[in-house]
Structures are given as C-alpha cells and as structure tokens.
Image (cartoon, rainbow, N blue to C red; front, side):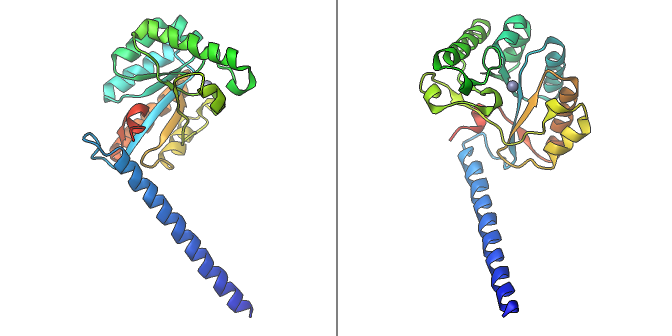
Length: 226
Ligand SMILES: [Zn+2]
C-alpha cells in the first residue's frame, strides 16, 4: 500500500516537472519569436539596465566601458540627478543608450497621491527631454511600486526586471557577477545601479562573461518589441 502511494506520488512529480519544463520552453521560444524580426537571429538576448543615476564619476566610467565593448544599455534616471549631471545624460543619449524615467526624487509612487506622482514623473520627463530633445517613453517605478490608476494618467510603459543581484547592498563584485551570470537566460532584464563603483565593475565583468557565452545586449525597447 505504502509502495503504491509513493509510486503515485513519483508519477505525479514527473508529470508536474515535465509540465513546468515544457512551459518554460514555450516561453523561451515565444520570446525568441517575439523578438524575431530582422535583427533577431539570436537566442540569447538580454537587457542590462541601470537605476538611480546619473552620477558623474561612476556613470562616466560605466559609459567608457560600454563604449569599449560596443554595448547599449538602458538607464532609468532620477530627475534630480539628471538635472545636476546634464553632460552625462547628453553623453548617454549620444552614445545610443536608452534613457528612461525613475521619478524626480526616487519616491514610492504607490504611497503618494496621484497628482504628486504624476508631477514627479512629468518633471523628470521634461528634464530629460530638455537635454536629449526626445520624449521619454519608459518608466521604472522605484521599488517596482506603481498602480494601474497612475499609469492611466501618464502615457508611459513600465519596465521592471527579472534578475536582481542586490548590487546596492554589497561591494562584493564577484558576488554580484555570480548572481547574474549563473541565473541569466534569454529575454532577461538585469537590474544594476550605476552610482556605485562596485556595481560598475560588476556590470562590465557581467558583460564580458555573458558576451563570451554568446549573449547579445539590447536596450529594453528592443526586448519589448512584440
Ligand atoms: Zn531606484
């Protein structure tokens, strides 16, 4: 009787594992197909994104490294930092990186009223547009917190992330690199912060390690084309 019970449990587990694996594969294929188009013959596409900057010293160092590697990234800027680092924002834009909004003062958008939230977002869009001349289409809400109601007041696409190595909480570059490189898969969005030396160092090492595994870096707008 007990043996029969375990046998049934084992068969059940196999079915569940099989189903999960299958679902994963389907999603993987979908992502590859969705980003299919002309430019996407790759099955290892990944977006590397940076929040909370710019910070003149660390962001410029990162931009140097990205340029050297010919990698385009996505930056979600805090409005007040963009305001005091116009040159860095201009450089980012001119070097082909995608620039998004991360609110004016890094507020939690679901904890303030709609009009202050919209104010924070619009103010940041205006600052960025005054530097780059282009409308800002993407927003990463700080802490990933936002509401659909808020989104109905701004015409922007929210961008979250799928790999978060908590780089802001450590200066251990190797730990951050490991936490990304071992987990990453096709279609992932990696979250890092360009205001820490250790994060910049980790980002460049992540790019080198993943490039050597055949990963191609795109900006989030390219990843989200579907
Ligand atoms: Zn942030």
